Every structure is written in C-alpha cells, then in structure tokens.
Amino acid sequence: MTRSDAGEIKDCQVLVIGGGPAGSTVSTLLSKRGFKVTLLEREHFPRYHIGESLSISCFRAMEVLGVKDKVESHGFQRKNGSYYAWGEEEWDLPFSHLPGEDNHSWQVIRSEFDEILLNHARSEGVEVHEGVSVKEVHFEDGRAAAASWVRGGDDPASGVVRFDIVVDASGRNGVLAARQLNTRRFHDVFRNLAVWGYWEDTPDLDLGPEGAIAVFSREAGWLWAIPLHDGTVSIGLVTGKEEYRAAYDRLGSREAVYHEAIEACPQLAALTKPGRLTSQVKSETDYSYVSDAFTGPGYFLIGDAAAFLDPLLSTGVHLATFSGMLAAATISSILRGDIPEDECRAFFQTSYRQAYERLLLLVSVFYESSRGSASHFYQAQLLTRKERQGLRLHDAFLNIVAGTEDLVDVTTEGAYQALSAKIRGEDGGSPAPISNHNTHKERLPESPELAIDGLYLTLEPELGLRRAAPGR
Ligand code: FAD
Image 1 (cartoon, rainbow, N blue to C red):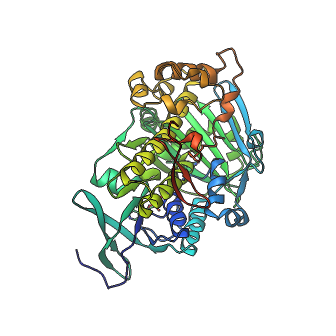
Image 2 (cartoon, helix red, strand yellow):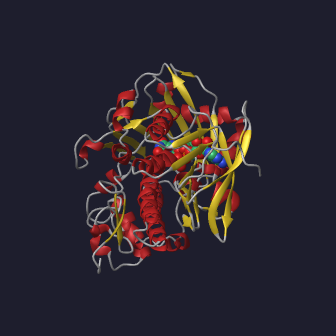
Image 3 (cartoon, helix red, strand yellow):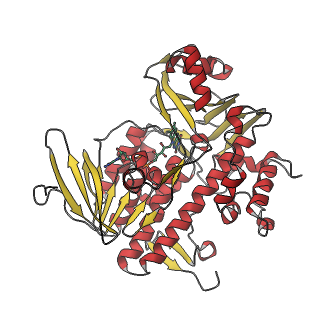
C-alpha cells in the first residue's frame, strides 16, 4: 500500500463506503451534527441503479435528512399508493388511508434520486470522493481501523485512510460481509431472478391510486409496472431461477422470456403494444441474503451491504434509509462516549435485525396469500418451519398488524400461523391488514415505550441513544 498525496483523502472520524441511499443517509446525519465524515463512492454519479418505487417511510427519511424539498421539487412521479392484482384478489392500496397528513412517496429514477441525496450529503459537510473504490478494511487488534482505496481514470491514485468507525454501505458488492468477513448468507427462499426494461409511448396504466406501482402475479412469479416522471415506464418480471431456466431453454434469450411474460399479462400487454422498449433488458439474480452480524468492533453494515430482501414490497430503499438513521444515532452515541460501544452495537444489531425479519416474514406471508397458487414458484417462497424458528420473530411480528398483542404468549410458529390466517382473512376478521403491505411505516425505536435492550434513539434535536427507565 502506498500513501497518496498528503491531504488527498484525509483521516476522519467516520468513513462511509458507498454513496447510495444508505451511505448518504448515515453520512448526512452525522455530518450535520459536526462529526468528520468521509464518503468514498466507486462510481461517478449520476449512475444507473434499479429500485425505483419508494415506500411511504422514505418520505419521513427525506424529512429527517432535510432533503425532502429538493426531492419534491425535482418533479419525480408522486406515488400515492400501490395496486396489486394478486392471485384472485385485486387491491387498491392508497397511502391516504394511513394515519397522518401528506402521505405520499415517489417513483424515482434512481440515478437522479441518488445524486440528489449524495449532493445533499456534500452540502451538509460530508467529504465525498467519487470514482474511489475501497479495496479492503484493515483490522488492528480485532478492530476496524483503516481502509485502503484506489482511484482509476485520468488521475490514478491509491492510499490508506484511517478512521474511528467505518460504515459499509457498499450495497450488493458488500466489501465487508461478502468479500472480507464471509458473513453473508443467502436465504433458501426468494432465490429469484428479475428481468426488466424501460418503455416509452405507452398509454397511462390507470390502475390504483395516482402514480401507483402496479403488481400482477402470474403462475411462476410476478410483474411490476412503475410510471416514471420522464414519461417512461419500468416494467419487470420476477420469477424463480428454475422457471427462468426452463423458459430460457425453450425461447432462447432473456429478451424472449421477458416479452413472453408481458404478453401473457393482459393489462401489461395493453400497455406495451402501442409502446416501445427503449432500453436493454437487464437482469439481477440471487436475491435475499443477510449478514450474520450487522456490526462488530469499529464497523457497521447498512442497506444492501447488510441484508437484501425480495423486491415484492419495495422495501430496499426503506431499509437503506432506516438502517442509515439507526446507524447514525448509534455512532453518534459511541463517538460522544455517552453509552459503552458494546451496548450501542447490541441496540443497532437487534433493532435492525427485527425490522429486517419483520419484513422477511411479511414478504413470505404475502406470497402465501396468493390463493390457489400451488405452483413451484409460490411454494419456493414459503419459509420453512426451520427458517421461521431461526428468525427469532417473536418480537418482530407483534407490530405487524394491529391487535396482535393477544399473541404475546404464543410461540413464533403460532404467531406465524396466526398472522398468515389474519392476512388471508381466515381468522374471522376482515382481511384488511393486507393494506399494510407496501404501505408500511416502519417505526424506528424512537420512544422509551419502543426501547430495545433498554435503549431508544432520538434524531432531533440530539442525534443519539438514550436509556429508557429501568423495567422497560
Ligand atoms: P446501493 O444503492 O447499491 O449503493 C451502494 C453504493 O456503493 C453504489 O453506489 C456502489 O457504486 C458503491 N460501492 C460498491 N462497492 C464499493 C466500493 N468497494 N467502494 C466504494 N463504493 C462502492 N428498492 C425499493 O425501495 N423499491 C423498489 O422498487 C425496488 N426494486 C428493486 C428491484 C430489483 C430487481 C432489485 C434487485 C432491487 C430493488 N430494490 C428496490 C432494492 C434497491 O435497489 C436497494 O435495496 C437499494 O438500492 C439499497 O441501497 P444501498 O444504499 O444499500 O445500496
């Protein structure tokens, strides 16, 4: 390793790897509170990214970051809810049914959205370096202490930067979990594959609330349609690996698999027939995974670097910003020395894990709720009993639907069955809780009542963790 020109990338308190929504969130919040934060991003923005439909919780995250007005004034397609044609059911899920005012989110072109967030981080004092890739995090006496970086292009350089804490927000690349520590585990469920492209000159979709994402289930998977503010529509297919392979062998190309799926969906065929596909057909595979640990001495993992969940409920950017806010409060307390680091890290690990597992459960139950789908694809989306028990879901499931407090004493298995029955409307009540899907307003543990391991967080006016009164 060689040190680059002195002062090029300076040592800092917090080093953030990656400038997606997760990295921008944690770095903005910490820098706003006066911490010295450096963010290294491998690409030059704007760069392409999938993940356009933002859940309602992102609205709150944009407010917390102080970037909501910039996002709003950019002119992204306003998203007022979701539409699901799911099995034999059809759901309009307007955000207006949720408590609170001004309930909306956005369908975003990610290259533009991510650039707004990264520029905002810069404007809040974060030292951002684009085109700089982190190669390795170095540990000293078991604690993350420095990282080596490389810059290519016209101005090649390399060096080492030292920090007090590093946050890995490097997305699916996963500098720590996937490349160094080998802690990334793929789930047996949701081993799916997505194929998508962008269409122009299509008629309005006109399904669900204004600007809704539309989701259509099919025998072996589902399709999405997301209207974007530049007049294009993102249309994608999610299917099982085996189903994809069989279709590919039969049809001979990724494009042919994609077009056949769209043509078999009457609503989307009506959309694409007069339209034009104006992009390449892209694909991603091997979805859902989670790292054994989200934190260790001197390091935190957030967003896709920590965990990824099947995109059925559009949870990716939500989890990225949610974990970014959690990490910012946790790191703030560590650096100020308010609360011992071990306790802070335990709080982060548990809160994030619960939020992730809750959504994992929800996605699986949602797949299960597709009545009449005995196909291999839907069977493959169901968590096995062993997986459910491994999730330690007992606490996480409690806040999934209102009125589950009576389940406090049941086992995880019992809770899963009860939740599944409730969502299917087989518990004697209405199947209304389905409206929680895709409209979820994940709650940060922001009050003593929601304390985890005796701690809760505050974002305003102070950023940090606080102790709840004993007994909570
Ligand atoms: P990213 O946005 O991936 O950002 C990580 C950044 O780190 C990148 O900019 C990368 O260049 C940088 N980086 C990587 N390695 C290094 C390195 N070594 N050094 C420096 N920088 C590095 N989510 C939704 O909310 N809604 C959706 O509708 C949705 N649809 C999806 C559909 C599909 C098919 C897929 C696959 C995902 C979808 N997602 C969706 C998920 C969403 O894309 C991600 O969850 C989200 O982008 C995660 O944000 P992040 O900041 O963690 O990671």
